[in-house]
Amino acid sequence: MSGYRQGDSGLILNEPLLWEKGKKGRCGFSMPECDVDEVSFDGELAGDGPDFPDLSEVEVVRHYTRLSTWNFGVDTGMYPLGSCTMKYNPKVNERQASLPGLAEAHPLLPEVRSQGALKLMYDLEQYLMELTGMDAVTLQPAAGAHGELAGILMIYAYHKKKGETRTKMLVPDTAHGTNPASGALCGYKPVPVPVNEDGIMRVEDVRGLMDEETAGIMVTNPNTLGLFEKNIREICDIVHEKGGLVYGDGANLNAVMGYVKMGDIGVDVMHFNLHKTFSTPHGGGGPGSGPVAVNKTLTPFLPVPRVEKVQDHYHLVTDYPDSIGRMMTFYGHFGVMVRAYSYILSMGGEGLKEASAHAVLNANYIKERLKDTFHLAFDQTCMHECVFSDAKQEEYGITTLDVAKRLIDYGFHPPTIYFPLVVHGALMIEPTETETKEDIDNFIDTLKAIAVEAKESPELLKNAPTRSKVRRLDETTAARKPCLCG
Image 1 (cartoon, one colour):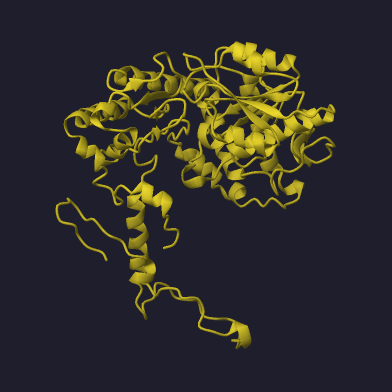
Image 2: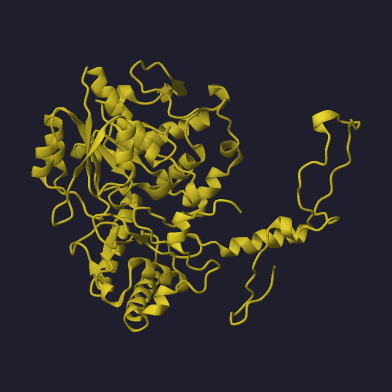
């Protein structure tokens, strides 16, 4: 029930479910007068109807307003999730996506009534091609992993067209978890490529693993350690010499947009995360958009329909016999495309480049200020994110999870933890370009304070968080005896 908790400042509400709040006879709306004759129902249609709670308007408004104050989001505070690029997204792009002519456009409208939407999609493809040095783009995939699947399906179709059956796909140890999954879904056995002491792939390892049975390699660049794969050109050459293709995971494009054109360094196909790099909120599972860019080699295999321009008219074309087919019923998440289109136009080429520069600067600033407090996995210049570990806190019995939980008490969303797997006890921090120096300094000072607590008062961390609505869970019991119903 609602009420106060002693010892806390302010009103702390233990909010009940609406079904628990409802009382018979309360009403929060009035139906318009019925303008048709009443009809009685018989049989299965008769009954009491759904068990909706009876609530007043103020009860409903206060319930959802209170719940909204419990959420933490990028509009609330810093969200330093590494490999997720949870950056602040300008509200002007939200406004464009909500314009009636765009928000209410139906995918089944005839082309003559969809020229504005088709032009936006066509132009967005051109901008993404320019950013990456690729030859063609599809906007159809609905998320990053969906884009990966589309890219690997095209690699599979390419080899099949040549009459080849390849069974393996090289995947670095620092890959996102979806990479080996996408390869496996397409029938390839993932072959791990280890990283060297500098956190990147060795040329000789790739040369030793790449053969005529291997379809290609999936490379995240910068990788999930936040390090640029500086051997990428030579690696691409080795893969191409054996007839393979190079897949580029564009999840970390926020570090290099405007600086690196993946097509120019040997990548054959790559996906973007518009919901990470190009301004769309993506917490809570969506929405997403994972366009795929390809070079001329793979252009015939792109999903259909494809957006084409003939003179001043835009068409959706399906007549591509080598296409892998549709990836979605219609054409992806259009609202995310509108936001990305607005973001690119408002930033311009130089603005996108500046965003990358600031993201890299902020990450290196955090790295330098914290490397004496937390163990730095790879002490070198990073890109958009840096990876620490709990090695210095182990002697006090404190783990990365304890540090992350304690950050919640200080009002910060925790960074990514225990990933990438190549770093034991990993603490991956990505500040993004949208955080101010003051907020970053506050985050750094907080982590330093937590490191002192780990030494002097470790129980504070072990019992954290203490100020959130939900306390620390018994994760062992939750995993072994999950409660999957309310």
